[in-house]
Image 1 (cartoon, helix red, strand yellow):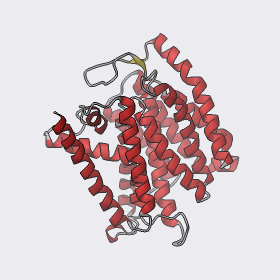
Image 2 (tube, one colour; image 1 turned 120 degrees about the vertical axis):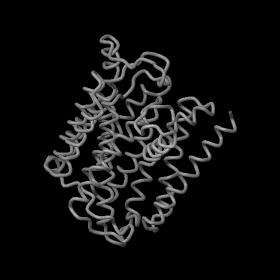
Image 3 (cartoon, helix red, strand yellow; image 1 turned 45 degrees about the horizontal axis):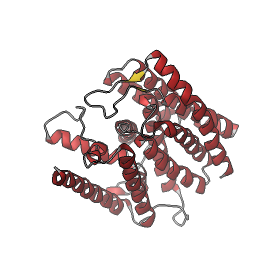
Length: 347
């Protein structure tokens, strides 16, 4: 664990030193997010904080991952570089949605074909094991793109995206350490440290936003970690001490907040006969704030819910995906309905 902690500290220090420079430069060059009708923030705020997160993560990974390990993960880092530059470009001059999607597909292709990161089986869910290659590629692309963009969608509140990312990365990082997958553990802790430094400046009232530069990189990283977790966990011996019987369900619990939020807004928008891509204030953090909560309170509530789901995955680690996923879906539905009822009663 010493190496993982050193990686987190290294990325923290680097990002902590870079963020103030980015804030000052962004204000000077007017690289800011301006308040608007669909924005919650009330002041002009620099929006390139994700640059510090990525630099801190990359340098820390370069230092603390053994040189032999680079041969295994170089394509992951190249894919993250692609996503990083897409995010920077979008923060500077907004890209069309189709261009961003094509960039994400290109980055996903690097890890799918060159790193061989794929969902090759349904792990017994619905009685399905091996998947045809074409189906496997399609599901993997879909998983990476959905997770990447679902995380980007929750980046709408001071401290929220960073806090949710830290909880997920800590869970992944600790688990990979426990199963002796040091490379992925270091990757998780390197990004965790950089995000924690950024969060100091992003907590309410925020001095800087991570922008698409940070949100897309973190989302892609969580997608990669999720798929690698599912495959690694499924491949562990039956009696391994840290094996979860529900590979997919456990991964879903670790990244539950962006997944549920995305599903919620898609359902709500379709029920209103709107496009699922139509921007509005139907996100779960918007709903909680309607109850009178501040940014920090909303963030802490969602972080607590996030930790609760992970705790449930630990408690029910002997149950299979059919049970865990069913439980996650039912619980998420009940919590969402309860939140809507609280808002109606308050109004």
